[in-house]
Length: 340
Length: 289
Image (tube, rainbow over all chains, first blue to last red):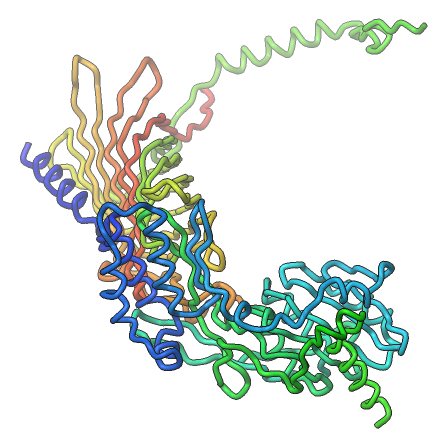
């Protein structure tokens, strides 16, 4: 029997040796605020940069927003306080999702002129434009290709791109309009960029957090765009952008800025250079946050956007008369390049 | 109207003349042959015990790459095991192989998100047996195994899933105790497998699968040992016979854990197992002189 006793003793010892979660936040308002604050403190990738640029200290915000809590507050009230706290980051990739609402800070586009009239843009495209997956395109009267890509969430295939560029091959240049494109899949941004270079181009760097410290980052890895094996565009391109170009769209503009025949025109892009991850709070709400930053080819931050080569705004008066000043300026620039 | 009957579709087969006589003679010859032979165990081939168990239980999953919350829920599993004594060390060493699979569906404490999980594991190794009593068999040895699994969170965006992969060398120990209860022969068994050294996959703290796809997984393979990946599988079983079938019920406690690169993970399951054991002995036909 002594063997049996020994075996049972070993069994009990081993059974109780498992590790437990050290996540000790409870489901009270304070517990949820603590959980959110800790999540951002440990995993948000722009904390040092935002503290420097926006002039706050994340450590101070815990006390500031804890003072707004009380144990009897409703879920809606708690949601408002938590959203106010993360809004200090001014990051469109930081959201709190509940069944009631989406907590957000969209000041990156809401605080600036939109520089886009979608009805006017549709007039330029016409009713007989081509639609290849997410791309809409036509040939304008002055033999300039006009291509609109509204969202990088709309998948584009290599076949779509080759067919489109073949169709537009006799044009003098291209106006690529991504105004209002709020992002989507990075792979679509990369695939489209590959059509505008004949050689491998360094477009930027990317790294990720390696620990819970604010400045624990991996060694930045260079990001290159390699030329596509399909049809490639060899003529001038004017890329139209506005403040609503965000996330993958922002990364696409960064890529295109490194291409030889491309001119970026319009307003500064909205930014959003962090690849977002998801997590959650004890109350069950989903939280999205920027987890790994990317940089431009000079290793500069593009979290607050990419500056255009040529600043042009939409003239509302001319827009009322059916003229999109940004498209017109792009056409004029391509015509000048053609003459040269 | 065409009316098809069964005979229209299927032509009637008429056996050729004399076929019944041939069939009868064939049966007689087989019977006579059987009467003149007997079976005997093949020398140097020991009996093999094969077990097939199905399990159902609860699991607790925690993966800070996906969420800081512990998810709990149902798990179904299967476990097949084969054990055979070898000729090594004067027939004191057995070879064992185990194949384990599990599927789980778990929820976060608030019930607003869920994980889907799956695991496949294969282990093979040798045990040295020692019997201090006639009804007690102790064994200890080592096993080499591989474990492949995933957790998928249906709500996450760019970090929707986490893959788990490891290869390890485990220490293994167990005991079997035979006894009678209500005049029925029974056998209680216990085995624990403890991974000691190996390799495992783990992304860095904030590394996305997008980056892994761009840069490869080479830098994400780490050395695993109990200090950073304490894991343990314990199986407690009871065998009993119902007529000529050996049934097995048991309890499986499977603990997989890791704490690497500031990421914590555990998958702790407790399952009730049930199934049967089959004992095989390779026989050969011996003709009577």
